[in-house]
Amino acid sequence: MWGTGEGEQPRIHIQADGRLGGNDGCNAFGTTWRESGDDTIIIETDEWISTQMYCGWEWFPAARSGKVNGDVMTFSDESGKVIGTLTRQVTETRP
Image (tube, rainbow, N blue to C red):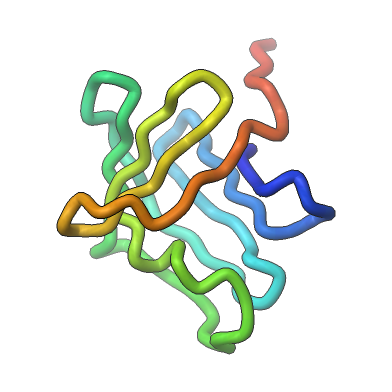
């Protein structure tokens, strides 16, 4: 789970099975993702679903990739411009 560390939202859950979902405090969203190597994920925009209240954390729908560096994930738009960062809120657990 990734977020700002400021209360409950915004929050993104990136699951090992390729699903990605979250809530920005206003809108719930979901899509799929795939690995791109070098600790980078590609966000699958053709699978994007979201409520559209336009009252919350509005940069995330423009995200097309995310790159992990330690406990920080940096998100970039389609042109490669950095549009936001989130920090790891929950470490991965294995059964």
